Length: 68
Length: 171
Image (cartoon, rainbow over all chains, first blue to last red; front, side, top):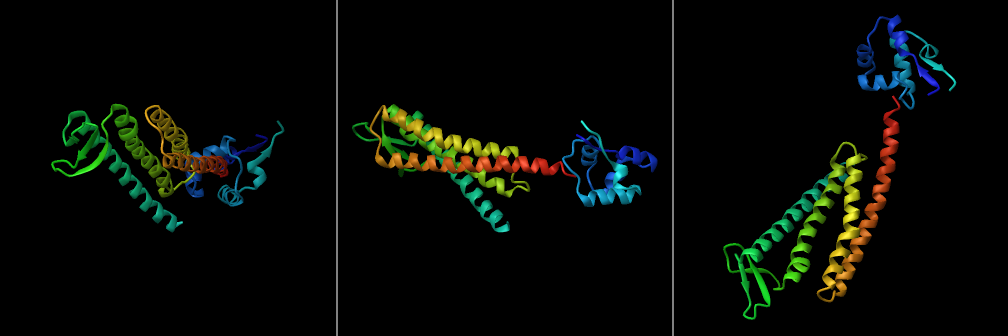
């Protein structure tokens, strides 16, 4: 998938665990894993907004385009 | 949606009751014919009468010939039990939180395959023994139409399932 979701990098910077982020986002750890591993088909704006708010970052810090 | 769920619950209960009813009929008649218990034959031994258990009241009758007993009497009853059981599964789908699931698609597939194949097959086999009345052909046609509706429902469910699986991957 050309769009890479770099949540792990931001989690490490904010010293937060995936489980805590999933709880604060109100999504299951499984769904967060789907997002992190590139299996997601898309991300909702409100999910992206919540991630940016919790991790104090910009969408560009989370999303990266990598050509195939 | 609540009216759909209410109606589905009622129809599920009714079809399940009919399923057990036909199964009980087939079972009791089968035991009667196999063992002679609760069974009476006419003087010429050409006709049988299945009696209500522990009574002298006959409630089922047919021609006392093995081929007829199996293919014209017991098998249709058993298959109608199966029909109502499968139909109940279709209605039960609407009681679930998710309509489009692999299981519900499978239930519809079993239902339409049964409606397409079984009535015609049993009738063809029975026709080897005796002629088939016109009403039976209408019944086969009706089951084919029901099967066709279920076939298209299964196609819609499969599409819905694909869309739902894709939607589930949008976080």
